[in-house]
Image (cartoon, rainbow, N blue to C red; front, side, top):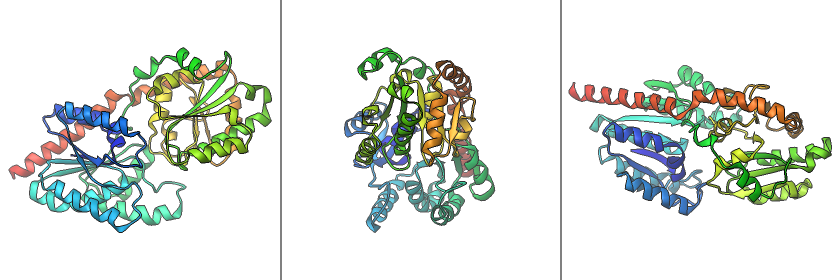
Length: 392
C-alpha cells in the first residue's frame, strides 16, 4: 500500500514506485483522500489519474485525511480508516506527508507483529530545518523522532535532512534518494514557439516562470514585489519583462491584489493549473522559485532539465541543486530587492544560456533512472528482510 494525504501526491510522486512494485510482483493499492477540496490538482485530473491506475490493476481506497487537521475528528476518522485498511495484511506500506505518515506509523505497530510487514516513510522535507521557526522544532521534531523508531526505512530527499536523520532519528535504516527523478527527455522537447504566441509575447520579451501551489510557503508574492523593484531599477528591461505563475490554490486573490498594489498587474499573469509545463518551461527565459521551505523541489529540477537558469531561495534542498553563480543565483526569500538584483543580472541572453547549459549537465544525476534504481534496491532489501523474518 502506498498511502498519502491527497491524490495529487500519488500522481506527482508515486507513479514510478507503482511500476517498480508491480515489476517486483506486488499487488498495489493507493490510499489517499481522493475527494479533498485542498488538493492542488483539479477534480477531473484526479479522476483521470484514478482511471489510469485502475487500468493498470492498481486499487484505490478513500481515506479522509486533512492536509492541516483542525478538529479532533480530522485525526480520529483517518486513524480508524487506516486501521481497517491494515487488516488486509499488506506486506509493505510506504507513506508520504507528515500527518498521513504520523497516523499510519502510529497505527502500524499492531500489524507489523501480526503480518511481519515493513514500513517506508518518505520525508519530502522535514518541517524542522536550519532556520525554521521555533514552533516547528517544538511540534514536528519530537513527533518525527519518536515515530522514526517504528520506521524500517526513512527516505530523505535532500542532504540536510539526510545528515540530521542519520544523527537524530532512530529509523532502522536511513537512505538518501534525490526526489522522484526528472524525465530529462520530456523537459528538453517542449514546444516553446506555440506557447509564447499563446501568451501574447513579443519578440525580445523576457519571461520569468514559477510553477507551484498558490500558497504562502511558495512565496510568489515576494517575486511580484521583486518585479516592481526591477521596474525601479531598470525601466527598459521591465518594459518587456513578464512573470507567469502556473498553479492553483487559496492565494490567488492575494497575488492579484499584490500585483495591483505594486503597479505591475500588466506584467504578472496567473495561468491556473497547466498540464503543458514542459512547453511553458521551454517558452521561459528564467525560472524563479521563491519558496520559504522546500524538500527537493520537482519544478526546479524540471527547469534545470529544460536548460533554464534558475533563481531560487537560499534554503535547504535548493542548495543541493543550484550553487550561487553557476546554474543561477540564490537569494534570501524575504528580500525582494535582492531577488530583483538577481533577475537583472540575467538580463543578458548569453549569461542565461551559459547557466542553462550548466544545469542541463548537472541534472543528469537527478534523472528518473538513477532515482528508480535506488528505490528498487530499497524495496528489494525490505522484501528480503521480510521473508527472512517470516522464515525464522
